[in-house]
Length: 298
Image 1 (cartoon, rainbow, N blue to C red):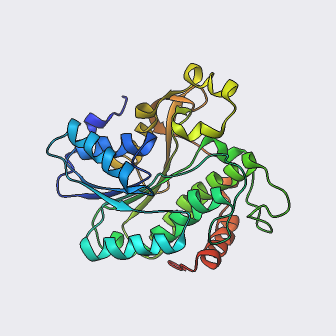
Image 2 (image 1 turned 30 degrees about the horizontal axis):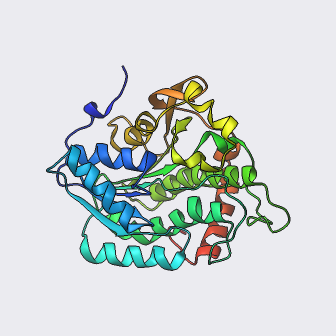
């Protein structure tokens, strides 16, 4: 049996945050969840683009409850500001969907001195999750969904040089950030269980989805994406399944079922050995706390 959004129960009364929700996978995720009745916070770096996305969602679902709040995941100051504002205005959080990301840009460092992909894709979400955990932990049946990628197979965690100060490979940088997201999802679920919290941590990946994320790819490569990949709407289905599927458990990883997980209906999928190395995950957690200054479940 193939899961789709119509299988998800009504979401009225629930609250979700979707990072990077103004475009691509994030937009289609927010659109679908809002259509099920969930109050959705579009957490985006550019508020004008977030408001435009909100208008598009309301055009599809006029009765939807959609909010916009500024969030730049490459800035720890901005992450803390977002969390402070959210916690003042919301008493519950059912779904935290850590979706936003950048892919293979030219080398740059964030304002905090982190390689840009590690900052925006992983460290910002690590800090955000920790800062929002108090409200997640007290919300029944809450879930945290972390977006990984097939690119988690591309590399390893450079514990001695995570910011590529000794030579940059944008491909390796992206692979490191997405491996970190997946390791985080698994380790977070382990720690939530040990702490006695009922919140589930789940991971997902979109396969090969045709989105703006590939803007830094050579054009000759992006020409092949439609042949092997799928639309952003279909690419969002594994995320939606991870967030709303009634048979999803903590520690599950959801992705497309066909063509080596490149496209197809959402199912539970496997991941490489590195992503499930619990010793390395503990080391990554400690490093992440040191870099972000956000400690939780330690």
